Length: 492
Image (cartoon, rainbow, N blue to C red; front, top):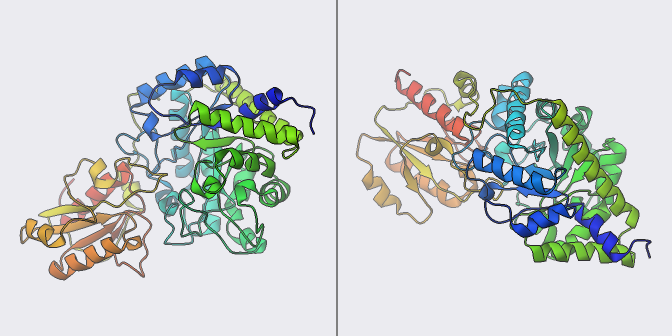
């Protein structure tokens, strides 16, 4: 039993919860919960139609609770929320890793931070510190700085330094590492085999660097590591969160969960039970995911309160989690008061980076020939949930393109491209989909001059793409178009 009443436990529970919601305006029920002490809000792509609208929305949230934690996934690349409507002007992590200039990475992250400060957001669920060691990874890929642990560590630390210099808290993810998976934890529970020694040699290296750089928060992953904890996924595991993250890596900041509405966390138990398990395992701030309702929030708060009152969740653990969340909120408010946003950061302008620097990250097979008379053929595969439906690549950059889906007739498409017009087939992770591989093979057989561009994380052993951009943001779409013009001998 505990000394807390149900009402007291429920108030503490609310102080650890970070729901999403439906729509572009703050619902009245959520404003009321914020006034009553709800920890904060997580904003997603569908909540945002412009930076002006986002600023107004954040202002309304702060009016309800000045110390609300307002979080967003702005990774500065394929995963964008600030530019969900038009595609990101940032290069993305894999591009930064290939450029391998830590000062440039820090600069990019600092600009992200200033943009978030301008709209009033204080917690960025970034950077992605996963070592993308598996080329078939369906959810990390170009969100990672690379496949080398030391490179990822250097750029993770640089990103943390850049972002946090603006007063915005970083949330380094997805602990203890989501890079060696072939399942998306949004849809299933990935299982990653490997001893703790193996983790220390690869997955943990960037997180240790992030702790050293002063990361204020770390985000968990919904993956099962049976060689470390055979029963509890990382988000629920005291062995992973307390034993590895806090005791071994020395992290004393806030632990944030990945969204608990993901299948890897709650498909079997439901979100209320997942919330209890997350707190018990050592998580502090519970990201609930998109489209939370008032009824769901009631169920989650009640489940946590009942677990405390009945002894299934130690009240000291709940108090500690609420204390850590409150401390982050107070610290963020103090930093916002101390660190002024530069006047050149506005809601109307967007950042721009040296085009030549971005193009330097693009791989082009020597001897690749690009014709002036060409058509872009864009393979429209389903984006993972983290990326969503933000515009990508040359489409976001304003290029015309022939859009192709899995159900389209290849023969009819071939007939629609006149002889003498070169096809530039553009996709993301083409090797991960059987239909895109078959499409490329069929097109190359009929049109040998075809050039294939992979804007995802490529696998040279499976697909010999002539051009790899290592990212599909709008910025890299422009970089690709400039590269095609350069190869075709078109003056810029």
